Structures are given as C-alpha cells and as structure tokens.
Amino acid sequence: MGLGSNKSTWQRQTLYFGHERGDKYSSLVFDNRGMGGSDTPILRYSTSEMAKDCIELLDHLGWTKDRQLNITGVSMGGMIAQELALMIPNRIATLNLLSTAPYIENTTSFFENLRTRVMMFVPKPLDRSVLDASLSLFPASWLSLPDTIHLPSESTPLVEPPPGHPFPYAHFSTNYERFAAAELTKRLDPKAFKTYGFLLQAIAAGWHHKSPAQLKELGDKVGRERIAVMHGTLDRLISFPHGEKLIAFIQPGRAEIREGDGHAIPIQEEDWFHAKMVAFFEEFN
Image: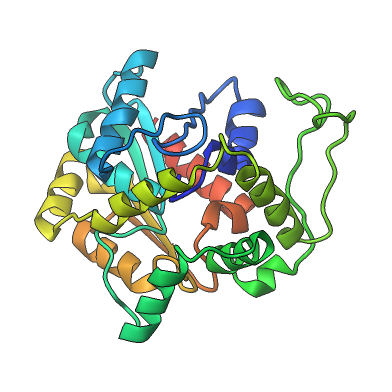
C-alpha cells in the first residue's frame, strides 16, 4: 500500500477475495516498514529494501512457486512492486501497478510543486489534515456521494461484528464520512500511524528511480502480457503524466487510463476494479 497507509486500506479487497471467495483465493496484506504493525527501524528506507521485506514474508509463508503470485501495488506500493518484480520475476503470475511512477518528477509549476511538498510535512489540526488527505486521494465530487460500499454480513466467513456492536455493519452518509472515520481511527492510534515512519517512507518514495532500461527488463522477465498499469487522470498525488511515462517504459499488456479518477482507484472504483482483477487472475492462473 502507499505512503502512510496500513493494511486495513485493503479491506474492500480482502472482503471480496479473502472472505467471500476464500475457497478460490488466498489474500495477503501487510504493513510496510514504518507503519502499522510493522517495525519502524531508524535508518534510511528504500523501495528496494521494502521489496526485500515482502520477499522475506512470502518465503516464510512458503509462497515460492513459479507464477504463483498476483502482485498489486498502489502508489509507493507500486514502486515497491516494481522492485519486487525485478527481484523475483518468475514467481509473478500478474503484476498490477496502480497510481504509481518510475520516479517522481515535477509535472506542475515550480511554486505549486514546492507548496505541495512543503505542505506534506507542515503540522496541521487533525480535522484539516484529514480533509486535505481526502482531497489528495479522491475527487471532491466522489467524496460527496452517498457511501455505497459493499459490507460484510453475519454470514460472511471469518468476519467479526463491529467492535462493541452487533451485526449488521452500517453505511455512513457520504464517502467522505467513511474515509474520515478510517483516517481518524488510524491517526489517533500511535501504533497504527507513526510520524517518523511516515517521514522515512516519504524518503523511500521520493528517491525511488527505475530507468527505462530497468523497466524494459522488468517487462521482458515478467512478461508484458502479465502486467497491468492503471492511472486516474485526476490523480493529485502522483500526477497522470507519471502513469503515462510508466506505460511508455514498460509497454504493459493492459494500460487502463481512468478518466476522472483520483489516486485511490481500488476504493473509488471498487466494483470495476474487482471485475478487472478477476478477469486478469483467471487468464494467468
């Protein structure tokens, strides 16, 4: 998952694949170093070292067969996935790179880029921080829509009721309210969100760099037909030109340009994303 996020951000996907279709899929989500339940060593982070963390976990689980893994990475997670694919290309069945980049470059004016970078690290009141985060991840028009997320029920395998309440789970009034509740839950838990871990992750994402030659090698070894790149045209965190450049460098079998989508495609386009992933998985598994 991306910068400052933890594994619970994948809850829509773990419900769909892990709980409701657990007879067919095994779903693995984890916190990158610096966030959530993972350790936060005080040293310089890099996307390549974070990829090695993932490989250690996969090896521990015994997921070591050729063409066994369907890897999906969003934002910084997509950068880590690029490194992973270069390290263990033969173990990958499909590689899905969402809202990510070969490297970060300035695609706006100098002053707009400077303001964006500075504002990431300026302390702000919690309510303002949550609002700014929502607008960086989603279009304002989507945030104001009713919350229609697919929720688990009492009959869903391996799902517990809401903490302190019986079933059923309930909807919020809007998408923004659901996002704000999840973000507040994370930020108010010092074990879930670690400020210095966020800073160290930001360094890793900022210094990530994969050249055209490296990404050509990635495509050659994994197989371009097994690679999908997705990017929203309204992405405010990693702007759309980054996605265009990644597509040009890899030449993936599937390039999905999502008009009007923001940064968090698996959340904003939940049903569409699941349908795309199922079709992709079934083709190569």
